[in-house]
Image (tube, rainbow, N blue to C red; front, top):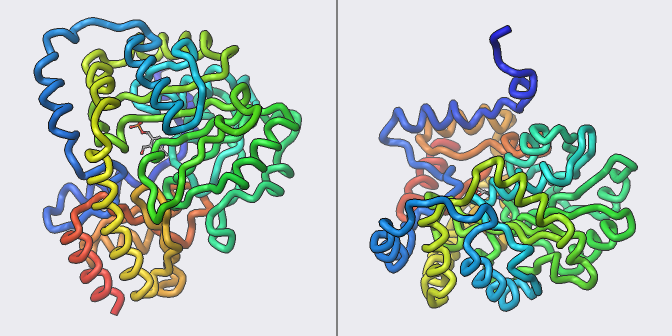
Length: 382
Ligand SMILES: Cc1ncc(COP(=O)(O)O)c(C=O)c1O
């Protein structure tokens, strides 16, 4: 019989599309909801892309161009302290594909995968589409939105296959310390679990904090599937290029999943990614400095108007507690901000039920717009 599959019907109903529809229909709305850099891709990359377009009309190997995987290995060694070989790097169509290919490769029906809640909204559907079962571990404000290893330990059972960690975190903007990652690594080793480490925001870190890759910790290489992207560090979202660093026994299988998902990553994007890895640091640093200025301003102003916000240390999000200004649900409050204050934010519940009582602000938006948006919210709250 014709109809929509049960699998599709079971996917969570996100409220975001409705908010986005209202936003696009009204020109006067300021959006603090974007999950992507407002910067354009650095000019040298765009110029290079334009000059090589005629050379990139073919499929590439599913695993990605060897030259790119070699350049990625150099970057991994220098920045992530991970010693990888090109055979264990798989280039993907954004890290979104990397998440899917990794789950398809590791998850059998009914296997459980632990996910942060509130956490990046794609984890849950990606696990369900891989026939697995997502199990939330709670990130609470009292614990500065850090995972609690004791809680994780209690959730692990015979069906648990993997733990997803995401630092710097979307939506909380918090980062996990080496000590905490070591504790989670200990659980994975003891219980023989995979860790999927989503490091999409690895370069967007503030206040002199350091990003730690869990695969770099002692003895962890064979437990950790590390996921990276060019989308955020290089403002290359539209080019859709990411990569997986896989334990050696999984690489072939991840390549196979990836082949049937997309055949190969985009050719031109891979050539541009090679170039991106050779860019001087100043291109990223300039963006990070701008995010940092906005972060400081936004967090200060949010706390002044009682939208209580823990200082985020990474990514470009602030996650604010709304209970001091309203009794409404996150969704209703976001809808009111949209309709009455003309400011778009994302309700915390988009990131899981433990996001209730919070809203996510993105500061991947020009400072003058952030200032204007905050004036509007302050006026609305008064
Ligand atoms: C935590 C996290 N992981 C992965 C992604 C996917 O990004 P991309 O597919 O562009 O690499 C996003 C996008 O917002 C994200 O926030």
